[in-house]
Amino acid sequence: MTAPDHPILLCHDCGAPHALPPALPGHRAECHRCGAVLRHFRTGGLGHAVALAIASTILFVTANLFPILTFELEGRAQTATLLSGSVALWDGGYEVLGVLVFFVLFLAPLAQVLGTLYVVMPLAAGRTAAPGAAWTFRTVARLRRWAMAEVFLLGLIVAYVKLSDLAELEPGASLAALVAFILVQVWGEASLSPFEVWERIAPQTRVAQAGNADPERLTACHDCRQVVAGSEGACPRCGARLHHRKPNSLPRGWALISAATILYIPANLLPIMTVVYFGAGQPDTILSGVEALIAAEMWPVALLVFFASITVPVLKLIGLAYLLWTVQRGSPKRQRDRTRLYRLIEGVGRWSMVDIFMISLLAALVQLGAIATIHAELGAVAFAAVVIITMLASESFDPRLIWDAPHHQAKRQDSSHD
Ligand SMILES: [Zn+2]
Ligand SMILES: [Zn+2]
Image (cartoon, rainbow, N blue to C red; front, side, top):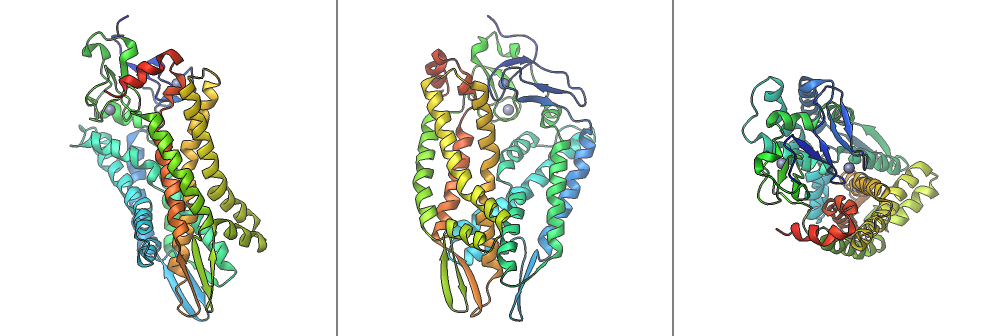
């Protein structure tokens, strides 16, 4: 067999080949085998996406200019901005957590909006792609999962509920800007088709130009989905390193899952923060935090924290171990369900950061000297590590391994090493 001489796509979730679907506004092509969305051209066009990216940028700046919450107790007030939590963690001796919160709450979202603007603006105006557009757009897509403004908002709600018992809380002007930023971001993502952007940066090239290769040896770029004959070198469109399958998916997955499982123990046994109220200090673990919420009859928030901090990490670890184990055995069963499980794990992982954001806000707001202080504890570092490591584990897993026929396993694992 020789490679087809018309442009094709390989499904990013199962590897099935498809003829390139037409680039029609509103056209949505799904994989017949696993149900993944192959290409979806939005009707709004790139001009729409530019307007929303500009609005996002303005809202993000506004969200950082003013206080987000003000906390009042015994006649003393403390305000927090979006970044106060990061600073409070750093000042409290947990620099790693401070840097992590700064990255996911400030750097990643900012890079996302500015990167999108940089790439899409010239394209929407009908000009050629800006210098470095491919690298920028690839980086923007990779940063998406690490930009966590919406998770922070949930953490803020939890912090608000926890503190509302204790003192007066007043939302600041930046809170409205943050909510608007999140909504416009969601809208912007729904109106921008990455496929369209890649097509405008450089159209999908014909595979046959690279020579007549065995279709088994075709490789789809992980980032821009350009299909290339062979599996070596860099993607001709976006410059990413090509791999037939993600390299060392199984050993890397097992190593990361083991590390996260071990860290899950101190994350739950050690206190994640200490609340000192009129001189009396009390350390809080994740579970005792949930118990306190239940005791205060704040059921919805208690359930939310229990789900995000305790259930999700455990289910992620079990789910990933199940995926790795079935792939290793070359199981041909329930491939579609396992692909869905993978997508679920991918989507839900970042929401476990809720507790970390809550702690960062509490540490920023409750700094009232002898009256009340809250600071982070070592358990929070272990817990953040569990969340990050499981996110890396699901990122390193290649769902196409689920679909590779058992007798191809050895061969494909081989080719991922070249
Ligand atoms: Zn598929
Ligand atoms: Zn590429």
